[in-house]
Image 1: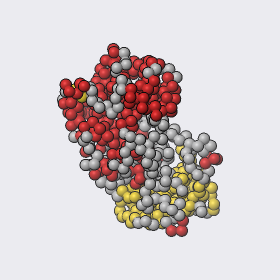
Image 2: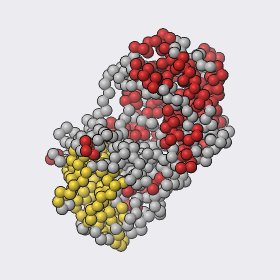
Image 3: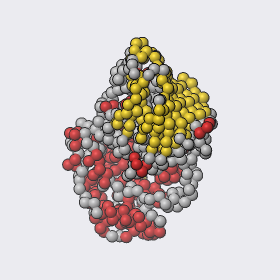
Image 4: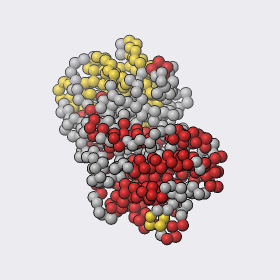
Length: 617
């Protein structure tokens, strides 16, 4: 939808009309989710509009980034309030919207304090565009498009100026070569920042009202810098950021695709074979119905969002619109996207009938749960410079009926440490929190010749810190992969050989064996851990029972897992000692993470240790 200004060369577009089109907005009252949207609008009215600005410096002073973000995030979305005003005309919603706008305009910077490490944005010395300033610019441009006929005129003018100042003008300066592109490293980035920031800027530019020529220049810059992002998925569609970030990565690319298709009919998805595979990642990484591995900074509850899945299927021609049973979020831009399409209640099911998935370029594999076979596993090589990397080359997950008894415990609650040189102090992010060896007390590294460290300038070639896939044989009922994982222990000079072999066999209820063969130039300490949230009981010599009882271990239902059990049998060429440690880090799920350590009783020059997992029938 274009305003009359389009005829004068100014584009101002939105997928829904402004508040004067009462035929459109009154029709929204018949939507199944309308009453829930009104209830949410009233809840938002109850929040006192308080600026987060006094909390801005906490991140740089104490490392706490949560307090500012909690307050900032509370006021950056407008969907329910805009819908409530447009459908009722009640000025209480408009007044609250205006109060929120004035508060946001008073902030010196729209970026998160965690992304303003040197406080240049806070002091007004430099304007950069991050994930959240781009998102806010998009949201405010949509508010202005829909509500400008009703908003206070001066406020509307200031909103427009602020969107240009914080989001559009900095990018136009980059287009025109007036600033260094390193201010916008994400333009050529390979992670979620690339599509998230671009989506926010594109969305804001289309809605705010500006010359088509200027918009076209931004689009040309953006689409000329997508190669690194697309290349990150390889030719197999593997998302190295993990499923938790897939929605904020591929999902944002899908929104860009939908916006441009609505705006001028262009199709930026179907001509990109790598992206067509990447958008199918949830089905391909799924281990069991509703369960996915929590690699990288993911939650152990990670699952693809229904909004993203339905938008994907709309763009792929598999459905006409969104189902009306999905609750509206708080975002106005998301609401506009949903209202553009007709209601389509065709069920969406994330499923994969294939017994396995393999991403050989990334060195990641899934042996999926199949009917009559409760066991599912995922294992990976990868490298230690992945986006949102954990030092976890050679890690694995073992699930029974979709309940992970051996798992990746996921990411930590973000703090200033998380994305700093101190990142790998975290026992969730370094090798300690993953089922991978520790040698001479040292964990995996992400560079050459030293312990794991996360300086921004770390440019160690990934080939030097990769798990090398030596051989693999994957079929419906059998899967084998052997990796050389010695490169991520390059800082330990005694390591001559370290190979890890995974073998999955679906017969007789299923079994999964993880074998390590290691050789050293002189005797070393060798420890092999198993990570679990479950209760551990020793059954006898070399046999252990791992149990998950949701009622007992998770009374607050942080995860929705059934009670299941797994037996692990340990075989070692040398005697070993067994111990259990609780990893004390601030997790999203707030459940205790246990590290079962199987440690060679004495230093050894060579060792073979294997873990054989079988589900309890």
